Amino acid sequence: MKGSKLPREFQRAAQAMVDHAWRPELHVDRVPGPQRLAPHAAALTAELESEGATVGSARLVLLHDPEGNPAWDGTFRCVVYIRADVDAEMAADPLMTGVGWSWLQECLENNHCEFGASTGTVTVVTSESFGAMDDEQSRSEIEIRASWTPYIGEGDGMADHLDAWSDLLCTTAGLPPLPKGVVMLPRRAR
Image (cartoon, rainbow, N blue to C red):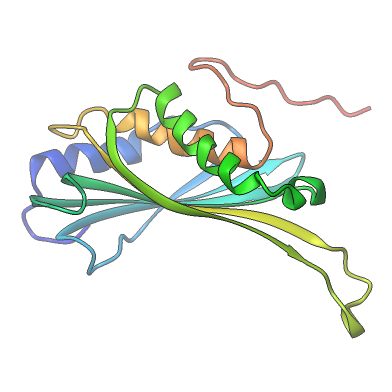
């Protein structure tokens, strides 16, 4: 967070990012926000683990310009990046990019987020190794890069947007979303 005198609404929203309760599979860290995109910024990174392996990663940046930004249609902006492995069949589906975008919209709506001016891209990539790397498995990934304007007024309501971000990472990586207050039980080893 930059700036010597932080606006109260930004302080409240940034504090919500620090105080948020995350799913146990998510490992979330606070990182420095970008310096040149807005007068004030805060950021988080996350890794999602399932059965001992990292299955997805994400970044969330909260930008704030007290003067507002016409492109944002507001004073706050959420910028997200999500990356997760997907199986080859999903990657080959020509509708997958549209599905990825619908996941974002559904996560925002399911968490009762008030938002506008959403924009972004969804990329699906399959990589196959050749030559000396011939023994490595093919890999398919989906990346969602998106931003939206959270209508959070005085900084309240940020928790809904944090839940939407974490739900999007889980959905993209193939984990089911959990209703608020429900904790997923660990699988028993056989």
